[in-house]
Amino acid sequence: MKKIILFSIIATFFACEKPAIIEYTLFSGKVQNSDSDKLIVIGKDFKQEIAIHEDGSFSDTLNLENNGYYSFYIDRESSALYLAKGADLDLTIDVKEFDESIAYTGTIAAGNNVLAKSYMINEETQGETADFYTKEEKDFIATSKEAKEKIETLIKSSQTDEAFKKDQTENAGYQYAINLMRYERYHAHFAKIKDFKVSETFNDNQIEFVTNDEAAYKNSSSYRELVSIVFDQEVNIAYETNQDYTDAIISASNDIENKYIKQELLNSNSGQMLGVGEGLQKAYDYLIANTTQETYQEKYTESFEKLKLLAKGMPSPTFESYENHKGGTTSLTDLKGKYTYIDVWATWCGPCLREIPSLKAVEEEFRGKNIQFVSASIDKEKDYDTWVSMVTDKELTGFQLMADNDWSSQFAKDYQINGIPRFILVDPEGNIVSADAPRPSDPKLKELFTELNI
Image (cartoon, rainbow, N blue to C red):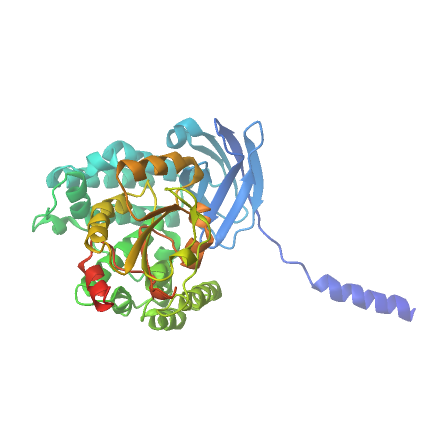
């Protein structure tokens, strides 16, 4: 009897421990004319791949932490998505007519159909980006307002709840504000008017918005973009009075009241802050002090430890047996005895090609002096013939080398090269003078050479 009673007590105890109920979201559908075998759902701190079967069907459950706005990707195309816990959503899409063909059914279909139609309104009203931003100021404002008003009408008439309507109405306003903030710079670019400035009354058409709304920042990609544009403007203003870009970012971020938004903006700019040079320690300390996100802290620390190895005077990372355009192979150790100025570039890189005339001029000016010039291409294997012919056609001098594994070459990884062109200066003993040296077009390069008595 005692055993039976004891068993009953234990059973009752465990019966009280009810397992947590997970409200999975079911996302399924049919994809036509896709070369991809997967659909990817992405959100803030969320990513899940869903297999697309041979017949184009897909179906999977999503364990979402929060209801909110996500994106789905097929091949290189993407679209906005609203997902909620416990909901089901079915998508049909023809990848050949990606945005035009999107249609949803299911418990949260109404909101997602609004998102898809909103995109089409913008596309149909504004047209191609270049055409939109080359419009004269008056027409540009009118077109932007027309798109905003059409989307607001669509939202108002939709069978969605009031919270969704509020979010999307605000989002239409954010996108309108982004258009106006971009206009001056984009019009100058697309209309090829270098010094273009908007009229004194242009900004009278701008809507009012705050840049410290944490909920909107988490919920709206348009709001995040808008805040980022404002932040970049503040950084550029600060940069005009600061020699150091890190100082400009710190100065602009000190004015951000919301700690979460500040953390995210700093993370977006961390690659620019964590560079080689004297400001590395300051940048690292500031980033660590302004984040509570453990993954960010780990990322910053990893970059910091690698970048410390690229300080002036440290032994330079080396490359081994890079193919030499003139024949044979060349290693960095073969070049000891003189200063070595290394240009990391690629044939497809516009900014790299624009530096070539200046690089050739610098090479000519310092010919026969205590320096040698190396151009290391990180072109992919498919562009090998282009590299061979370009070096010949442009009569490139110095050591013209091909890296062994394009972007994934160990030399590029060791030097933390995430963008090109990148210029590196190594001393005659093989130690780093500058892991991010001035470009050939920058007068500071010749000043550096003069300081070194080259």
